[in-house]
Image 1 (tube, helix red, strand yellow):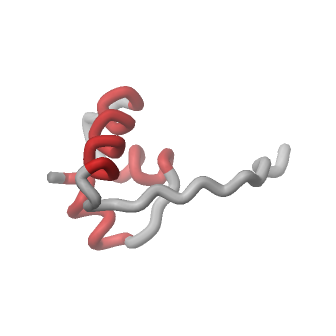
Image 2 (cartoon, rainbow, N blue to C red):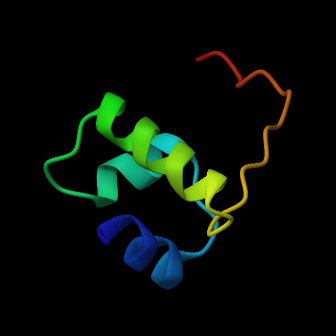
Length: 55
């Protein structure tokens, strides 16, 4: 799977960083794959409750 390959090579990534590294995937596909991998215990999701700075 491209998702596991990218995470193995790059380590921890944010959603958009991961999406940009995988060619030909949209938000809905990536979200469903990540939820499935998390459910299977292959990845761990960490949510940071920090607002990004405004430009």
